[in-house]
Image 1: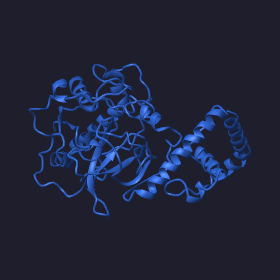
Image 2 (image 1 turned 60 degrees about the vertical axis):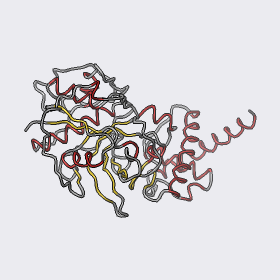
Image 3 (image 1 turned 45 degrees about the vertical axis):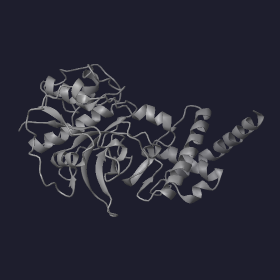
Image 4 (image 1 turned 120 degrees about the vertical axis):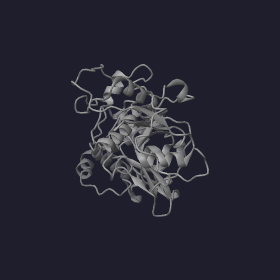
Length: 360
């Protein structure tokens, strides 16, 4: 106990003594692509410098010095993991993003909230099962598709600490098909789903995209985001915020599980809601490249697939829109390797995909 107390005191004095001068340096710090340089790992002084700079960059303020010391230790552990991974990974890299002061357990508890079920078709009525797809499925799909370039993807949103990934995934797919059918890219309300779709989904405590599609089809549509803005927490359902719903869907369809050709055919037509396993530690700090790191297939996060293609090294990938803000990954997106030896593909990407249908 005495040795531990002495070490804590020394570190505390070090931080207090250097904080004022380091804060003045933080704003002008020249960050590398991953947010640190090799020299930052060489001494406690440099680590404290880096931590203060990171705090300034991400507007992080801690209420007590004890909390600051705790977060500094977590920050160091994450930094060493990032650096070690970057020395080994060939196709992607990690960086010091806004999650660098969270343990991986804290991160998972706050940001992973998908609530999958054993079988969607037994528990959700697929109201579009007998309808035609919005656009006739192509037999020969393009080599690459990017719905961002086609104007069917809204800017990346940030779910915050609300476990609403299922709602943002649902909305991204509906925004996409609405633009394809009507020509209008309209940001829609995730908050309406969080507040009002409560029969099967659980607001900030998780949900499932198929449930949300069924709800929207049965209730007549969704408000614009500007009419029912996102507040990063559960609110009271206000179905009468606007006089009319602005976007409707006919229903939804499920993509056959673990079938790459079916998924790519569907994705060639429109953005998809997909579920992935994002519980791997590298996901927390993904910064760029084609991700082919360690991950499982226990689905815990809802995202949107918005395209596919091939990288400079010949790596085939799916373009995924995440909901952790534009500072994460490649401006909020991640490219996930799609040609692997597992039928469910990288992080279970092919296990549970679906898309809304919309009549012209």
